[in-house]
Amino acid sequence: MIFLGKLFGVFIVLAVSYVILYGYIAGASSLIYGPQTNLQYMPLIVVGSLMSTFIWVSLMFAVGTISKNTIVTVVAVLVMFLAFFFAAPIIDELSGPSPVLNYFPGTGASGNILGTNVTVSSGTDDIGVNIVNWALYPSANVTYYKLNITAVRVGERSVPTAGLVYTESTGFVAIRSVAVAAAYIGSLMVVAWVAFKRSQILE
Image (cartoon, rainbow, N blue to C red; front, side, top):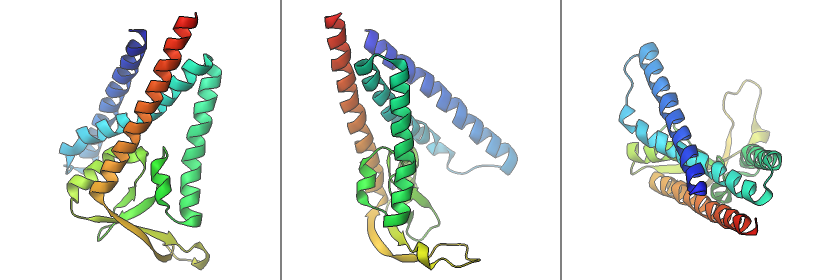
């Protein structure tokens, strides 16, 4: 009851926060720029953002129940978040978009939907956006190019590519990001539950 109560409380706070945030963004955009398209997909963005955030919530639950120390929990999760946040883009830029990045929490590999100017971050941070991209471009492919940073010249606006690394469908990107997030959330919640139950028995 205590464990589920905490979990449900966090879920409600996050859900309300995201609904207010995205509602404000949609309303402000409509007032400033006029009628907006594809607003029917906004609930998918909210659900995707909730799922993305719950990876880190689950990690906090797991670390918190094991360490029983608020400071240790916050510092450990913050360090891991920053490590994934900065490491993935650096690896993506220097060594090319590796498929392995898509199986860690964060932005994942960066690509483009073929035939459009839409950029895709195929990791767990953009679950909602990936689902919407799948709905908007159901038969399109996401292409991942390695950037040739050494070929950049003064005055150029774009970084030259060194060649195609790999391609995958928008549907696969969306399903994988959801599956990876669900796997992290499920496994971390099991760890948190076992640690919480064990601590209650010991106490």
